[in-house]
Length: 133
Image 1: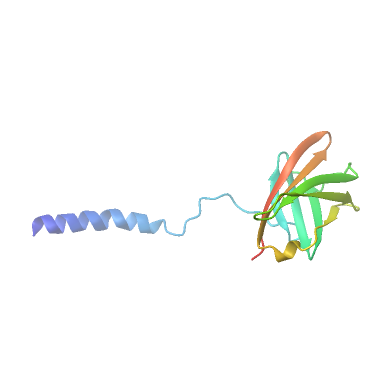
Image 2 (image 1 turned 135 degrees about the vertical axis):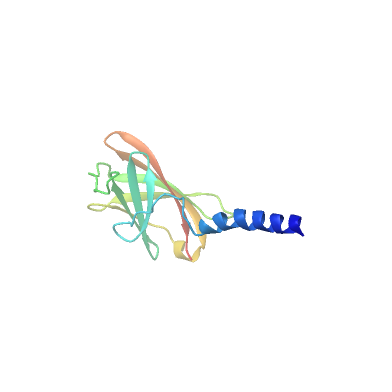
């Protein structure tokens, strides 16, 4: 009986600290995207994609989420739908953002999008894993 009580007290003594950490998040803080889209790191920059129907808007920021000067007239990339080959996507400059159209993009549940960004001579890739839930 004494061994049973010692075993139970050891079990409860080690389980209590483990339960104290329940719900504790060790992941990096998530920043809110300025235009309500999906924000991703891209090298020395951050990129935000905003999807409205088949229309896409891409915003490019510095690490402090300040818009950067867009120098290129176009950006290229691709979209990869499940069980399909990747399709090229061209984003055209439209003021302080880039825009593109991808037919039927909101009808696909999950897909990956990669956009080649060039700012101030630096080339980076923004990778978006989109989950339309």
